[in-house]
Image (cartoon, rainbow, N blue to C red; front, side, top):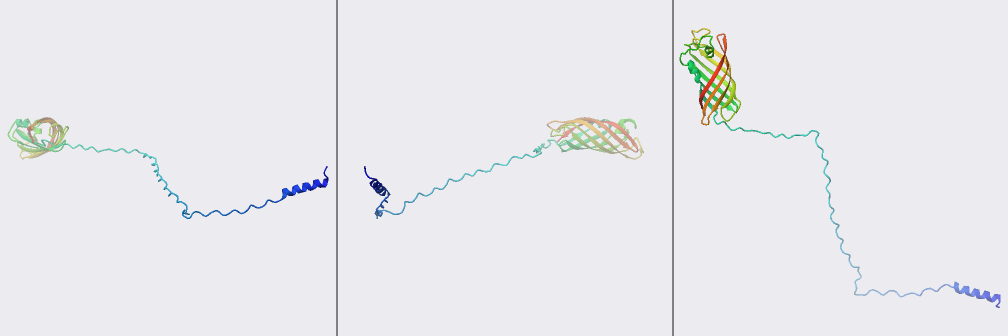
Length: 242
């Protein structure tokens, strides 16, 4: 059996072997230089691509704001009527010839539905016209059998239906002026003037060739020398339109 000092020496020798520092690594040679014929610059990178264009999105339209009060668009419709085919009518009143009165009418259309008429009259021969109080005598300007007279009427006619000529129903007023000799009222020794108003309603026809005929009636008021009378009127006209 070994002795204790020898055992201790062996342990010390073993610990010394493990505790010895390791020797440093020897120096390595430097790396070789690059080849002479090879470029030393790094390869160039590919050019950077431009970013795609940005799409501009337009802003949304403003919200619709309707007006508080809706506006209505009204279109004007203009109706242009053609000119009249026969704007002038020249007619005679044959009924007056039975009492010695010659009367004619000249009517001119001013515009559609409106016309003016002028009617001169004259007593051309003696005839029985009734008494001084008769309606026929008063309607002729208080004329008696031997009276002579000259008068004129200015009238306006409104044509209810207009068909490019003076035809169809009409109505309108008239102003009566005249002078009568040997009148049934006032002083029969000299001519006396009279005036009056009338309103007539009638119908007139015009053929395509221009022949014109009409009939109508109305009332008239006549005044002379302080005397007045209201008498009926009977109208009949025959003539031509052109």
